[in-house]
Length: 233
Image (tube, rainbow, N blue to C red):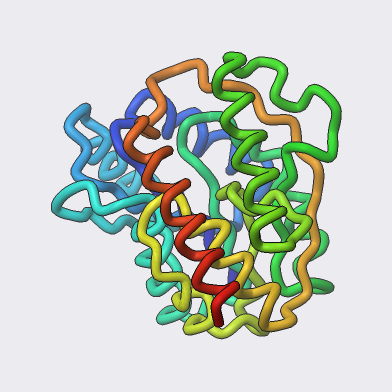
């Protein structure tokens, strides 16, 4: 049993096309939307998709609780229902469903398969220069401060739930964007096997990014605080 978790916040214009693309790649995979009280009709679109296809489920949350928190709730849902393979991806159209095949290909050999935006030249060429700069700075800071060599801040992943204990993922305390690098860092520290696959990541074409300056500053502060705590311990 396989589940694909997709957090949403005002992504009505993206999710129907995304579902069609996913179905073309793998018609048997179940989909779970975790929505943070979207106001643009995303919830209504999810209910419509659910009506057409019972393999689609949803969690409607009362307000914006954080992207990391959405992934945690999705993972709890998946583990409770005994899914063996769990994938996660963004709803904004930047994560190409074609990579699902590669993620699943390695799922029987590794505990976590993650995507890497930096092992392939010009994979972020469509991004605005300031976003490319901030993303690369974050990438190098995380790798230097935590002594890891992964692109650990991406959400496009595949978990082998037969091997990874849920509590080891939930040891990551951050509920925002830092959840991704914190959880990968902890899984690596616990000696789970991790595989990366290179991806090309286009910039979103519909809608706007949910990441704010506050999110960026907060993530950097959390990273420095976290790395200092680990250094002391």
